[in-house]
Each structure stands twice: as C-alpha cells, then as structure tokens.
Length: 488
Image (cartoon, rainbow, N blue to C red):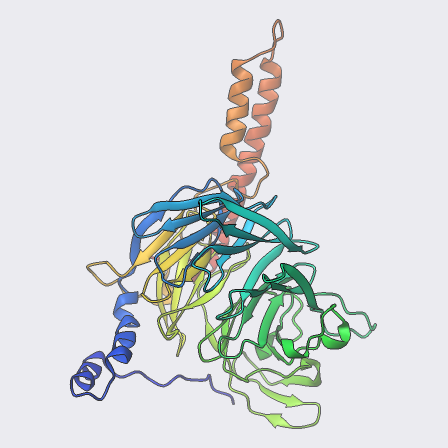
C-alpha cells in the first residue's frame, strides 16, 4: 500500500528563536520561517477592497517589489494599484475585445512592460512610456479563448501562452514574434484519432525553466521539455516528458484541470474540476505515456502502479486537499508562504480555502466573494494575499486580526447562501430594469405601451425566477456537500 508523501516537520517557533540567538540559525532563514508562521495564516482578514473595475476581476498579481498590484477585468481594462492605500496608479484599455483573463508584469522591466491574454484569443503587450502613455500591440492569437500566460523566470523577454485551441505559443519581446511550440493532444484512441486538449493552465518549473506544464479538459497534467519541442507545432515533437494524474482518475473522461502551479521544490500542484486538489512530488509522474501503465487495486491514495513491462513501481501517492468546490468556473490554484508552506484555492461557495501543504490539513475558509472566488495571488515577500472573482473588486488580505480564527474541521463547515446574481445571463438585472424604466418614461406619442411593458415585465420576471431557481439549486447541492461552505 502506498502512503501519502510527507514533508519534514518544522521545529517549534520558540526553539527556532533559541537557535537564532545562539547562532545556529541564520537571521534571514529565521525571518523567512517566521513569515510562514501558521499563526499569521489564522489572523488573515480583509485589509482593503479595491473597487474601480466595472466587471468581474479575472486576474490579479503583484510586481516583484510587492508594492504594486495589477488587475484585469471583464471591462477590458488593466489597472495598477498601490494596494496598501487603495490608490490607482494607472489604468488603461488593454486593447482586447473581450474579457481580460490574465495580466502580468515582465521581470526586470521596471514594471513598464505588461503582457495580457483574453477571451478574444489575443496575446498582447502594453508598454508604459515616459509620459505615462501606454502603447498596446498584438503579439499573437489563439483560435479560441487564451486563459493563461507563463513567464520565463528572470527573463524580461520570454513568455508562453496556452489556449482552448490546444496550442502553446512562445513569445520573444525582442522581436515581438510568436512561435507555435506544439499542439497538446489527447493520447491516441483506438481509432487512431487524437483530438487536441482545450488548455486552461500553463506554468513553468522555477528550478528548471525548460520544463513547461499544461493542462485542460483532460485528466492528465502534461510536462514538456521545451528543448525537445520543434517550432511549428509538429506532432513529431509534441510528446510530453512526463504526465501526472491521481491513480483513481486515470482514464476518467469526466474530469478536467483548471489550475496548475510549481513549487520552489519542483512539486506540481493540480486542481481538478468537480474533484480535489493534488500535490505531486518531483519526478512523481506516470511517464510520457500513461497508457503504458494500468491501475490496479482499490481506493483513492492506495493504488500501486504496474507498468506494461511488468515492473511494479511503488510511487508515492499525491497529497490531497479537500473541502472546496470547483465546478462552475476556471479557477487557479497557488502556494502561499515564503517557502510555499500552504496551498490556497478559491471555491464556488465564494470562499478562499487554505490548507497546510505538508499534510493537507484544512486551516481556513474565508468569505471572499458574493458568488465565486476564482483568483488567489500571494505577495512575493509577506503573508499577504490578493483575491478576486465574480465581484467587481479585488480584496487584499493581511494578518492583522487581533484574534486568531477559530479552528474548524472541513466537515463542520456550513453551506453559505450565495447572493443571487445574473452574471450567468447575457443581460444584467440592473440593465434590464433600467431599460424597462426608460420605456416606461418614454412611450411613443399616441401609442399605448402598457401591453408591451406588461409583456416585457413578465419576461423579466421569468428570467429572475430562473436565476433564483438556479441559485436555490446551488444551495441544495451545497446542503448535500457540507464541505462546500464555511462557518467563519
């Protein structure tokens, strides 16, 4: 039987203070460990709300110094914030024609070069000029939505994009060119046909920038060595170097992956839709062709893997993080803490979930959105978090609470009643009411508009009832899954 992989247990804080005092622990290492204290996690609370966008905020991120936050939204605008004071340093139109999905500062550019991708499939660059003018230009595009970007660590020029067309593209800002690296395809079926994977996530191993992980509407997270990828998307050079999947999900066609993250130790964090989050140790994958291995045995976390060669490989089971709900949107997943001591994710119940990385222990569930939390981004140096979701604001979390949060088990969490919103519909509720009010104020001359108004009101009532039924259905689902909510 395989057992979950365990991290070394940290020493007690008082003991580490003694070690620092006698010189057995370097001050900088002590400071990093203190910054990762679980007590700070238990004191996180909302420090400030940044409320200037007019649409859902789909992306947030800090610059390298940690003093500026960048955000992008359905309003197609990008904003730069002094997150501590709440002041907007700069805002500009991204140039995209649809919702902005990600915006990132390029490293070592003095925060003057920003790359973005969006629902229109475009990948663009924005360059801030000396006079604070912003020039945006198109670098490349995907046939379908482009969800995520991955920046090469330490490079002010190189980054990658992935899209729902299955393509992974390489960008070099020195030439403003886009090069197609490969098409991510599902493993060949018996018919010999292999369709592409609709990609949702892409990330780079910080310890080995040659390794690129991608995932989407498929149960496997694939890691590619870009040194073995030939430009032009040739299928001859699009074979992954490793694949990751929990044993009980191998071959499952009903799950997909919405978020990926590499830790400083090259561990791969994978968030599945309608399932859990899993952490795989370095080199803990199934190999380049998981079809060559078969799964035997029983339940989750206890399967052994027997390869076609007959070799029985006792791989450590991935660490699992349970309690959140990931069904309705494309959610990211991330590490927090100076040494990635914790795992964090948003949830359909409108909360931020935080677990201890080394053993999967559930720590916090904090109310972060009226509907759904999609994005969580850690500060580069401090125990500070930025989050966003369906609401039009960004929330900043700092460990400033006087009292520690109460410790609860994930099974004790109660369903949380979400505020009914028509974000799933094409016409927002307020806009519909505004249009009806305008029609009521401005009837055509000599025309009785009462019948039309009555018909439109009945149509609106039907839409509102449908939205309410959908919301009640969500609550009913949450009643069945008590782990979907939070009692904090």
